[in-house]
Image (cartoon, rainbow, N blue to C red; front, top):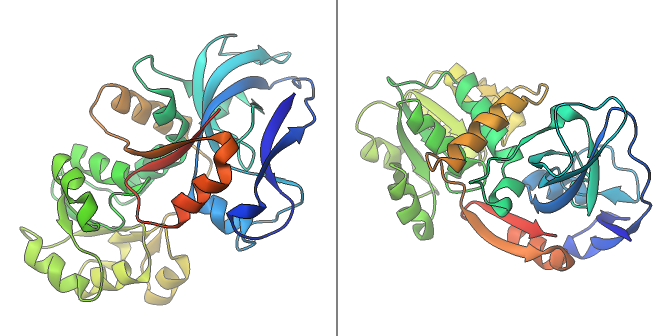
Length: 301
């Protein structure tokens, strides 16, 4: 029997169910992967609540995973049965098995724990895209909001690897983590710009926003050029205020492979806040949606 996490109406985590689904043959050009771990992301919540995307019921859930190749459909190349991989399967990754295109997965380094690999695709690729799009380099002092979250924790480290000085907004419980990766922590909340100004060793030159309008407004108050205030979290605010938003585009597996190698080598850390068995998917999303996290929440199959 094959099961998958699905929902048949909009609502909170309680609408999710890990239930039997049809197990069809692997189509030509696709690769069947047995899923071992799958990460949770903010978009999952928005989609399940009916705030994002075109959803048809019953709807699959989740977009990133790690697992082992089980079968190659006719014409699929680049991988072999038994090979550990990680990657993406949009809106269907939380399942016992997924069928993906070869370009949607990359080889999983042997030193990369499966729980970390299962939560890496969205955070790793998005962080790499954001740092590259903003042109972060050694001359920059960068403010990153939600700096200890799933994406933010990788963003701050990639920005540091690019040579930048990095300030990150986070709560008290994440202060030690940010310090451990060389980031100056700034508490979030009202009067953010003034706290950043006091903490920064020099003028802030770029803002990478993973939280929302408050960070964008702080960047403008700090005198950052609007083109270098880049948001992932609040496109309407960026449009209204004349700042930038990370453009949508095709997923880049090369970015994922690079970040996976950095994590496997210990040069980047992806914190795992908590791992839940897939049978406890409702509790996993209640935890995910109910508090400020450090890193990723992951389902284990």
